[in-house]
Length: 115
Length: 115
Length: 115
Length: 115
View 1 (spheres, rainbow over the protein chains, first blue to last red):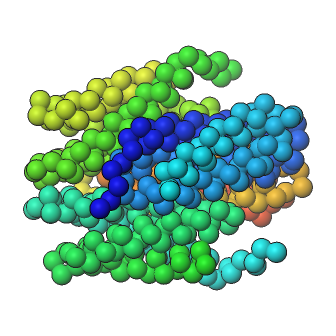
View 2: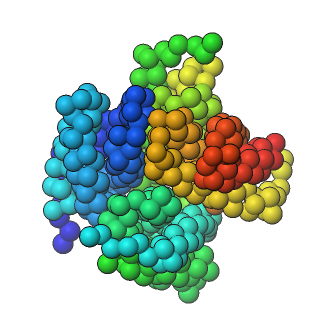
C-alpha cells in the first residue's frame, strides 16, 4: 500500500541536497575567511548543521531508503534555518546569497518528498 | 523563550545514540557473516539507516545544536524500525537481540529529547 | 611553499567521489536484493567502506581542506578494494560493473590529488 | 597471513576516536562563542576536519573493517594538525587545552593501529 516512488522528484531532491551540501561547505569556509568572523558565527553553525543534514539525506535518497520521508522532513527544517540566517547576510556576502538560494530550493524539494 | 537544555537527559541521549550506533554496526557486520545472508537483508538495511541516523544525531547533541529536536525525532523513527526487524530475529541471533535493546533505549531517549 | 591548488583536477575528483558514492550505495542496495545475498556479502562490505570514504573525502574537497591529500590517499585505497571485488561479479551483475567503473575512475583521480 | 586483530588496542582506539570527536565538536562550538572568533578560525577548521576523520574512523573500527589501517593513518594526521593548533590556544582557552589532549591521545592510538 506504500505509494510508488516518484523517481523524477527523488532525483531532483537528491541533486538539490548535494548542491545545498556544497553551498553550505563553501559558505562556512568563506565565513571563516571573512574579516569579522564573529559576525558570521551563527551562519557557520547553521551551515554545518545543514551540510550534515543534506549529506545524511542524500545518502538515504541514493539507496531509496524507506526512512527518506523522515530524513527529508528534518532536512527541510535544517535548510530553512540556514536560509534564514544566510538571507540576513546576502546583501554583503555573495557566498551567503548563493547558499540561501540552494537552501531554499532544497527545502522546497525535501518538503515535497516528505509529504 | 526556548526551554533550558536538560543537560542530564542530553548526556543520556548522546550515550544511547553512540551505543546504538555501535550495536547497529556490529549487527550489520554479523548479519553479513551469517550462513543465510538473504534472510538478514532487511535487517542489514535497517541497521545501516539507524547507524547513519544515530551518528548524525550524536554529533548534533555533542555540539548542542538547535537542530537536535528534529534530529532526535527522525532518529527515534530509525531506531523503532530497526528494533522491529531485529526483534524478529532476536531468538536466533544474539547480535539482533543486543541491537534491538540498544535501539529501544535510544528510541525512548530520542523521543524525550524531541518532546 | 604549498603548491597552488589545481582547481580543475579538484573539481573532477569531487565529481568522481560523488559518482562513486552513489554507485556504491546503489550497488550495496542491489546486492541486498539479489537472490543469493550470501555470495555478495564481501561486495556489500566494500561498498559500504568505499561509500563512507567517498562521502568523507567529497566534503573535504568541497571546502578545500588542507587534509584533502591524506583523505584522497585513503579513499583511493577504499576504491581499489571495492573495484577489485565488484569486478569479480561484473559479468553477472550490472550494478557491480557500473560500480567497478566508478571506483576505478575515483581511485585514479584520488591518486592524482594525493600525489 | 593478515595479523590477528588486537582487540584490546582496537577498543582503546575506538574510545579515543569518540572522545576526540566529542572534544573537537565542543571546541569548535566554544570557539564560535568566543569574543574574537576571527582569531579562532583556523582552530575551527581543524576541529571540523578532525571531527569528521574521527567519526569516519570510529565507524570502521566498530565494524572491524579491513580498511581501518588506512583510516587510522589518515585520522592520526588529522589529530596531529588539530592538536598543533589547539596547543597554541591552550593557555587561553580550556576547551582548546582539553581538545589538544584528546587529539594527542587519539593520534598515538591511531598510529599504533596503522602500524
